[in-house]
Figure 1: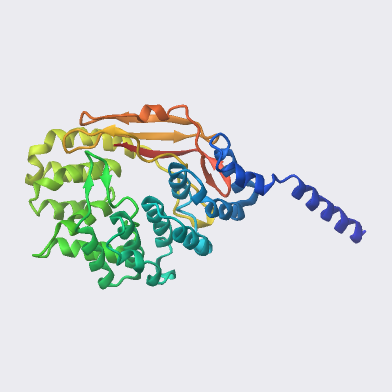
Figure 2: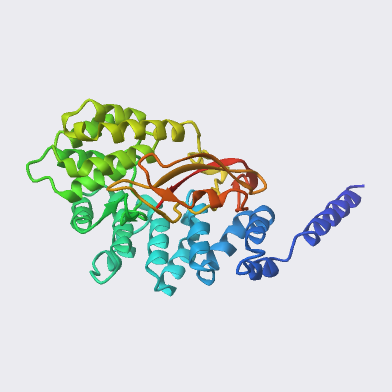
Length: 357
């Protein structure tokens, strides 16, 4: 009787394996525009973490736009298990955006990765600044002021311009979760030798609750940073940040823009994106372009939108506005199909924030 049960279980296992799609065929389809998205999903659904490895190993074979979208979709997984694959990708590419992407993915490891992995890119002044900032954002996880200062040294040449869409911090893994770097940066804002690098870094780290940080920035009395602060507030759904700006003398000449930005920020804040805080749920976000072509108003961004991606990957524009008079191509995303977000290797509905330019 026991032998019969074993045979039945073994037979069921063989049948299950025989029903899996061929992995090599799926990998080949990744580079086929008509089949790529379905191949991505099939690899994840049927092969799970092994499927993720197959995708990562083949990113360099994909068109640049697809490569960036797929890489960012996987950014919130525990990528440490794929460190050798990411290192191989990094050494095999010459494209600055791809280098920056892989360095950003490696930067998510925190203290688990030696700084020596990042240093060749940090110290090479011939590298694109986005690459250098992505690399140094990996070392600041070590919580060493020497690395913090190196970040500012590189960031002194960085640009963050909402009107043109230029964002040299686009691949820098900096946010409020790095408390050591955040409080160190806050301290720099109160120092006599505060620089543009400190200011831009602080703006790019702000989240929707960073009212004290915004007050410190406004107290610097630099009117040129006000448009950047408004843009950041909209992007993070920071109505409270804009309320701080409304009551401060530094921003009094831009009260009309702030009022418009509050409406936009409130619309963005209504939608919660995929919960990526629990790595055990294997979060994969929707592979939607985060920026599209557009034209910003003077000193300000162009378009802001929330895109819903259904379980079947269909995109719907939930919110879309050009609060400062810019223009964009965001509406062209409606009805298109993308790789949907996934939790525990199953597709789920999610929301994605998209901007232009």
